[in-house]
Length: 256
Image (cartoon, rainbow, N blue to C red; front, side, top):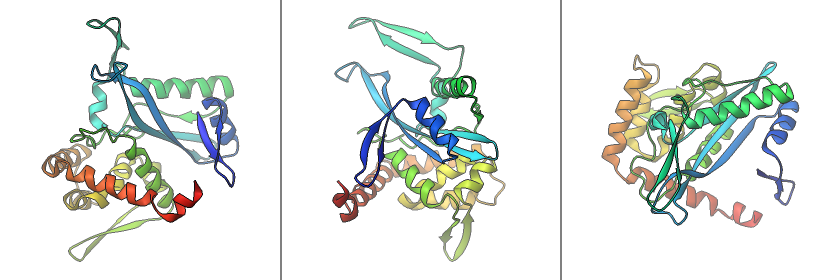
């Protein structure tokens, strides 16, 4: 893994587990931007596989850490219970994992290793308290912009970790709790959904109506699926344009 350090953002390479253990010993809040190389079979790619972008967060609570995992595919990720490896130009080998979601299995394996070998106390399971099973944010993505989603989540995670924010629709105001509060109270999926309200008005209205309502998580996801289906590529275009404009600010250009 690699991370930036110091005044000049020097890139440091280290072993993932060793860096996690070091940061946890210092009780740091940890955000991991994950590049999933060879994420799944794609014969259209030069090497036969496509890459993917996901992220994870580790948050200290008393004498333990809670881990949260976000794949922008959301609920669609639940179908990823097997992996295909290329044997030849026409043949693949299918690997199964007893019905486990591959993404979750990998995260659980890392957690188990840290807990066993380094006496860490990381809490993680396959439930929606620790995993994003919301709307597939990439439903209309035909260009492969998955790498942008973790960066957007990182921005809102950092900016609103302890700060609440308000959504205002037609003079009505509702408050989105801080990221920390939502993670602590088991509302990780709402925390992720709230990161994308700035990129589509109908999406924002849908999340707005969900706050302090009787809507279940499943009902919210169903409404957001319809919302993004109606939006088509506009949601992704707004999100991508916003990110490009953000990183092209003089502040960031001067840094590199």
